[in-house]
Length: 260
Ligand code: HEM
Image (cartoon, rainbow, N blue to C red; front, side, top):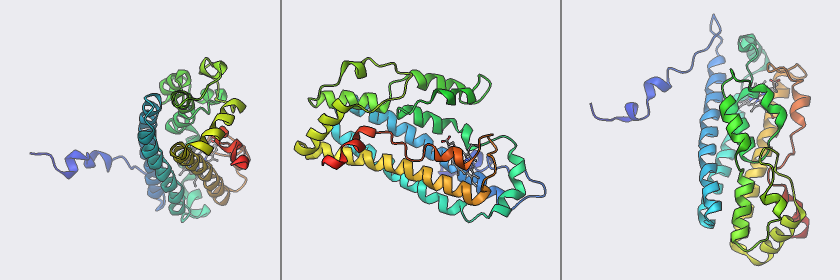
């Protein structure tokens, strides 16, 4: 038989992957599974797009990077909006199947962690949660040693005429990227003289803000659904999640805004 919608999209396989564990079945468990799987599919796409953005940056392709940043920031807005759907689930309803999750938690979403690492937010303590027998172990080890979007952004800025300090070019890749005042000065100069680059910087800021918005909506759904309970992943829950709430991934773009 020739290819059709179902076979191309592997629908029978895809639609066989939602398997609620509660018995008798709790109505909202399917929603919970579908939402999380949907997020994982979007994470997969975002990682795919950032691989292209890295190539664009290192090839000095401004318009390619602008187009892809526009896409990832729009996906980010979708991820934020999807929280509304899950918020239709009450705390009572979540409690009816929460025990079934045992110790599983979004905490263990390795694609989300990959995304953090790809963006330069490399938190070494995160690696403890991916021992060799945990899915994601290899990906995390690989991402730890990889150049990040910020490192590729430096390539791009350099190709545009900026001077990138040697300590940033030769940095230890396993460490998180850090803000840098010399980079900020050059971004500031570009903002004033290069409207084409300013468009890219604004799309990057959109994405960064979108990620922070997602963290905020996530903390709020956690708070309204489980209050001050500990997380199934073992963290203190809301208080733990609040710590990263305002963490930017492109801090240099935020640091100069008062001068623009
Ligand atoms: C009722 C809904 C939800 C609740 C109650 C909840 C609860 C939690 C809690 C308590 C944590 C902290 C770790 C732990 O101890 O488990 C956490 C982390 C996390 N959750 Fe959720 N979550 C919900 C929905 C979602 C959704 C829809 C996603 C989408 C993928 C998600 C992704 C994550 C991620 C990525 C983390 C790690 C965040 C970080 O370490 O900064 N969660 N969640």
